[in-house]
Length: 340
Image (cartoon, rainbow, N blue to C red; front, side):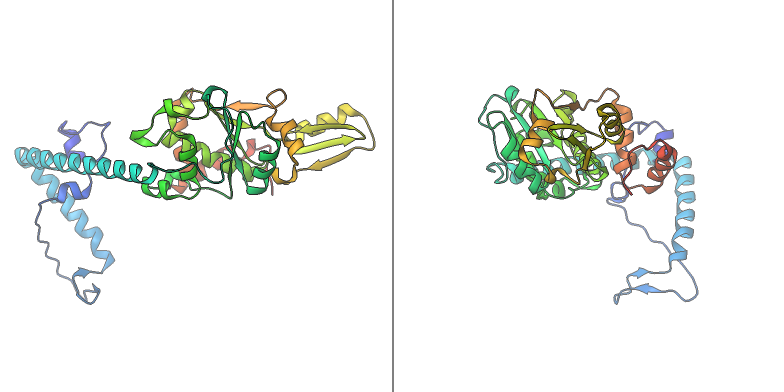
């Protein structure tokens, strides 16, 4: 890859050729002489001495680079053949993914847990993706059935940043969501088929709820970015505290808001309740605080800085641990809402 880029055969913005792309059709013999060789398996077909690998790789890399520099014509032919193999591999992957998407989603009925709304105009319809079956029950009872649909999701879903498409489509938590939205996914995605123009994430107001919201936002950002780009994704703001005295009740989303309400009310016999989760709220409370269009607060998710968003999702949700540790160390002192 380094040699091909120096020769201008692969653009800097392009991905690397894989080992399979370069090795396709290649026959090589490597002779290694050593004391006490260890072989893997009963067939003795593979050398198991780990210390040899680095030495062989170093010698081969140096020799191959020297050969390519001395024989640039042969090098170009090798890269051309490898690029052809890479294009064939990518075309096969896309064809396979398309078959997987169609077979996984076509002909599927709406999920059984979905409590759909009566409205059929997407612009007037909302889908609440609710954490937990108990909270989903309260949301179903408290909603406006004419325009608000409810899809409960129990537990934490798959982190799609680390998952292949076939695993995403087979997930018992994600597949019902894709079907409920009606848009398809990936290359078959069609925004005009979106069944709800407000897709609202409703999870607990604590750090566990924040993690679930992050997992859901990662799914939308990676697999359905058009929903985010067109302003259809929202985050509900359920309260974390209930402050009451007599018939007067106020709700607070965090400790700071709770303290401000307590100071403002100036009453000695105040009762402060901390909701452990959405399931503790009854249908009326959930409607008044979180679902009533006249009183609720929604945060619209946007992609004003797509490059920064891509970097952040990769850092926080990707497989590499080191960048995530660096981010946590850099941002730890700014944390204001932490459950221990």
